[in-house]
Image (tube, rainbow, N blue to C red; front, side, top):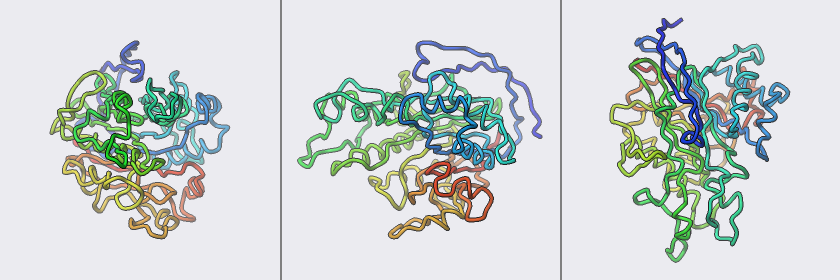
Length: 401
């Protein structure tokens, strides 16, 4: 076991939606590891836990163990056993009960004989999805969901995200770019009509948020002297549009935001008015279903390469000998016309779109995609999308603390 020391920290636990209105302060006695380097497992998992109506997932999670798919998801998580886990497509619940029940009723209870997991630090991430704007964004003459929301969604918080951690989350110093306007990005890839006029009206662009869900920086406190920034986002899929490629271009610029953030771009302004991005010596990990594959799919201008080829991103994980891979993808996911190796796929639709990308100063030890081949342990949990249409991606990182 790791030797531990005690440190009293004060954290603010609130959603980005309500943080400015009502803040609850909680003093927490936190066990922090010593400064010895240690291997920490970080993971991202798109669990497809979104409902057809607001509150549906939360109501199901009241009796979580009655839903076999939820139990399979929990079993996958227990088998991988990450220290820090980011969930994608987990509907936002303003009461916090959905995430609490998922944590307490499923993860903290052994599934299929695997060890239960305890995540003392959890955080729901507010989302633009289903938040109706004041403008007719799609130009059809009415202001209605889902197409006139800041992010596509049938209700507020559909397809949101969450983070669970064995390490403290410094939410007091988190930064959200949920409200950052697309037009305020220099040289933004804004969509155009065939005659080169703007696809969106001026009224729409004046309210159009770049982030289809959220872009957040949540510092994870690994020790008294070491913090790593969790950069979490879920860009829109680069499809479901027309010749103007509005979703492809939005996806590109949502990914670009992180590339600019780790370069400390001065144009960036967060939801609290703070400018700029990370300092040059800040460690970070980019998490997300980024909906962009480096070789296949419908991305605009190879969008993901803005991160995979970035000098501040760990090369081994991004493009080198530690790209997360699986035996299951190699066995099941070869599709005609694909360029990319299917062992790197993170989805059942043949694409590498889910990422855990550490900064270049972090040493990567191992990585993987939880997709067992036929007959391997856990195969039944994910086979034929039994848990989700995505697979969990993880990375073991050695971080000097």
